[in-house]
Amino acid sequence: MAEWQYKAKNRRGNVSVGYLTAKTKRDANNQLRALKLRPIFLREDKETALDRFVTITYDQKGNQQIHLGSGLPGIRDLAIFTKQFALMTERGVPLIQTLNILSQQQKSPRFSRMIEKIKTMVENGATLSRAMSTFPQVFDELYVSMIKSGEVSGNLDQVMLELTKFLEKAARLRAQIKSASIYPSMILSVSLLITYAIMVFLVPVFAEQYSTAQQEIPYITQVVIDTSDFLSKHMLHALLGVIGLAFFFSYYRKTEQGKLQIDQFLLVLPLTRSLVQKIAVGRFSSTLSTMMSSGVSILDALAICAETSGNKVIENIIKDVIARVSRGSSLSDPLSENDVFPAMVVSMIAVGEQTGALDETLTKVSEIYEEEVDVAVKNMTDMFQPILIIGVGLLLGFVVIALYLPIFDQAALAG
Image (cartoon, rainbow, N blue to C red):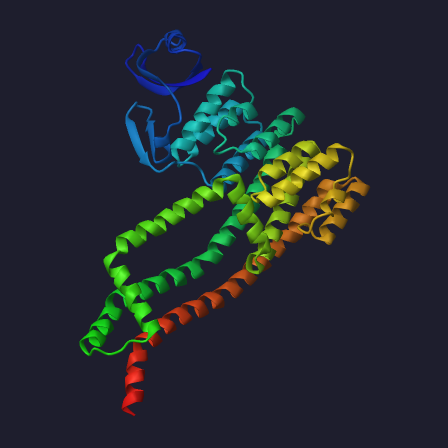
């Protein structure tokens, strides 16, 4: 089956736009005729590379509208959508009506179009989880699995409320990290601009004076002058080189080997180890507790934890845990054999297994680590800022001293 977007007129000449599901274009045309609609245009609706930058939609009058940007919802937008969905489901609003209302409320045209397609698929007999799974760029495996468990158990509203809490926690964490990185990024950016201005505009003035005076220049001063000369003459090449390195790093980060090596480095580096570890443990506990409380089996829940861990080292550890648990081991035993999960966490999980309250125990662990992450983010920011300031100060101090060193040497000879 394929999705088809249409624009059609009825017998009164009123224009309508929408989506339908059909195997072929002929079948789609037949469906429109059955609805007594005359198609103006009909095309298969496929995601293309252009959709990452431009979104094309049609209003109820059939007028084409072009929107810049991918239009994909952020995690906070998804949390709001999920909460609204849960509240309407809890109050007995029919599923199709809920989807229709939510599609009209979205600010993002592309997200609204996705919800329209989900509604069409549900109207044609698909389950909500199956329809959502066709949009993995918005509804990931964790989201779809929880929706599926809610459909099976008949507690879709409660599952979606749990999912809302999970998404809100993830959004809060992301906002914390983003907020903590703003000040250091501003300092670094301003410092680089000042350094560039000194190298390109100030250093050549000193270099010309020293050249005119035919004065012997110390080695470090010559290094600064040569660097300035390179930046002045080859700035475009330097900029292209930096962009190329950024693209290479981005590509390498997406490879299996690159992701593993970078994640290993982050877990070893003293500045980031504590924060990365706490985020990983908190995310693991929160995801697993949310999945298990929604009725997902522990092996399926662990598999999703591995996929959504965000860290290749943690993912490999969880995959090893899955293999051990599937052979009859407890959850706490394999977790205790690595240094990522602290002894306190492993002990709490062991107690939860023994008492039959593992999901509640994991919820408590995630709450503890939510506070721990807050402290770790603050500590890392407090530690990083002075290191950055000192580093920038040393760089600028080196350039200034290098520039004035010939003057100091001349003064010493004159004295």
